[in-house]
Length: 212
Length: 222
Image 1 (cartoon, rainbow over the protein chains, first blue to last red):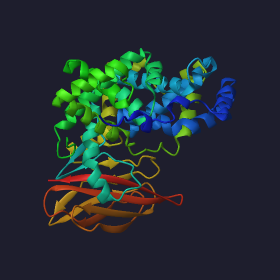
Image 2: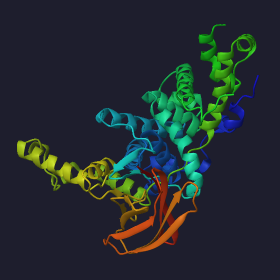
Image 3: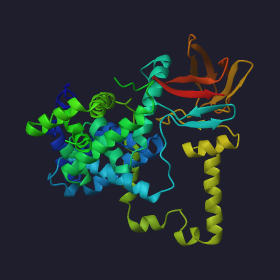
């Protein structure tokens, strides 16, 4: 009664692991080699920054979260024994720093990428680094993307983190469970609830998300 | 199988991890339940929508340097930190300290160096700062107005640089102008604006170390 989606979407999940080069950098960083740690940051900065950006929705906080994550990684890497995968550990650090930030600043309101800043007769939306599509193509896609982002932003904190990790960062259920220190079954059921909630929110916009 | 159970299984069904008797029961339920059939169909589309990777963002150009600054600060000897120019917490928590802290926070907000600050500045009618993601060329835009069919705003940059500004309005060819912006000197920009309210896309491009950087900002015009 329909195609499944998992195999097409995450064909490499089961084989994800560290390359020999990554393992070498981690080992050298554990021994205090700053050059190796610098290479490790270079290797993961884009991924960590993008994950942080998708959690918080703005460059300023993303920079703080991502840089704090690498500081914490530097301080803790000597104790990394490889019990969990390095990436899972790094994602757990990023998630914890993000949740700490949210706890510290409960008044912080989640800001969508498309949120408008009122400005006299006009209003300026928050910046989007978007070097590829033409402005016209971006205009056509932006409203649909904005609705999807807004629906994701409206989810409870842990559900939102899971949606970003699974669907945007291609983490497996097991990796998410390890990063969030939750049973795999809990991650699966929360993600299912999150998707159903997203579906309900998007159904309110049939012009952009039509049903059969 | 009841609808509630069926909805609990819908992700597993879409991912193909539902097997055996449970799969048969689920499929039987779907055959007799339009609502759950719709849910399964919507869910497959949602997976497709979510699998479209969002536009990747780039960390600031000096991100690693920033990380190392923080690492070195964090590992500086405690005694060294005591001698820092920062006031002690006791001073900050005194009444006078709190007044100065509040004034400093307000100043930062009014200068629009952060996004929330931008909102405060905009609310007060002050120029609005939109930082480039890499911070290498802070481009200031504001205040934007539409008069007589013209969209007007000001740009300033931290260094003299040619800036290309274009505006895209639905149903119209993209209009672009080149502006030579002197460091710290606001340059007036006027582009054909929308005939009525709606959204236009403003793109600001500049060159940085031989590489073209750009920012795209939707402007909602009332």
